[in-house]
Image 1 (tube, rainbow, N blue to C red):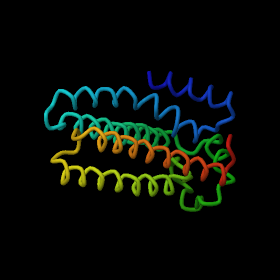
Image 2 (spheres, rainbow, N blue to C red):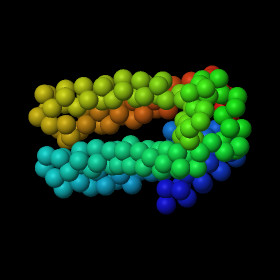
Image 3 (tube, rainbow, N blue to C red):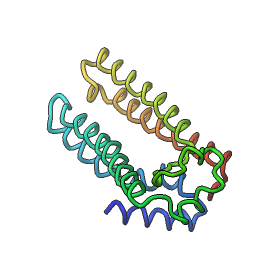
Length: 184
């Protein structure tokens, strides 16, 4: 399902002129996260303390980070260590100035991931996540819990969280376009 969502999002992004990086932080992220959002909402409504909802969110994100990144990267590292440096491998990384090829001579191939905008994205996400956590702490102090409470503060908190997401997407997209262009 995730591969289908990624392919469809990539095609849609191509049609509307969005590059893969922008498509990933918008369409793919929404497509893979909305089911978790609805599951967390249902869990929050059924659990008086919202522990199941928070557990679902952290569990889902840990699977995405640890398995979604860790497993493919481990497979890639094992594959290139076993296969070694092929002509295709050398051609792919020949123009990459940040790689010290002298340290790789005589050894197997290495799984290389050329860094991009990840540092900026993680820094921005971390800052916005801190604001989110501070909001939840303030709600716990003021209303005795992170969820629920009077209607107006509840809606304002939801709007604030959506604004945090919009800030993340907008600032990330501007950064991507400024450094690469919209469709690189």
